Image (cartoon, rainbow, N blue to C red; front, top):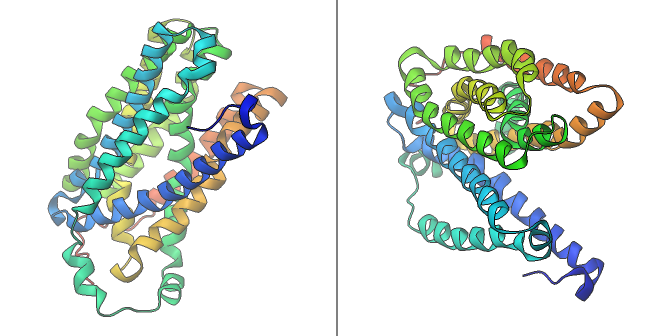
Length: 320
């Protein structure tokens, strides 16, 4: 609903930027809160499976966005997309936001939270006592965040710009690769419920690390050259994405569980995920495309080490 530049000048861009910042702040609170809430509501023996629904729903949303891009590119010209087509996803997203608001108004607090509410300890002293867990959240987040960005978010742009793949082909390949991720997530959630969080996180970081360069070299101009490497990387990344909500909740006591997850998670995503598009462009321009791949692999290595030394938390009682 923002005015055009011709109508409002630079104020139009400022309005859009402000709206996106508010949306980003809301998401920064919502994501860890939803992770914590779902983990506390889940039965301990199925917490991994329940927690995988966070990224199932989120990735479905990403797929809908990609699918919308496919449809709009089929029916709208570049001029129409620039003039008014870009507003359509925002409008549909606004309707989805109203539906989500109704759903949130009908939620009830978890028994874990209600039983701890009367204690009301000081949050920040308690957070400082759990600073080791906060650093673990950062360490586990940085690798997966940037790797997911490369293979799920920027894969289309890179395939088109760097490799000359037709945009429609790249969108279709990315869409189906994300469908593979969605299907894998409940499997990895159940895997961690049975075999433990550590094995799942180690697989979800080490395998993409080992496959990153071979899969990156495979990308070319055909559908299969993007779909296969993206699907394979995202398939194993599902082991991390499905289980981090449960792991993060299990690392903190109830009194600081949400802020304990939210603050380090936001720091990691802002510093590493937020800078990924700019670093990818700058490093690829100044050095080479493979130089950015080295950067991503170093982050995955850090996350792999953190996962290896992580204490096993499967089935932990969250009522403390």
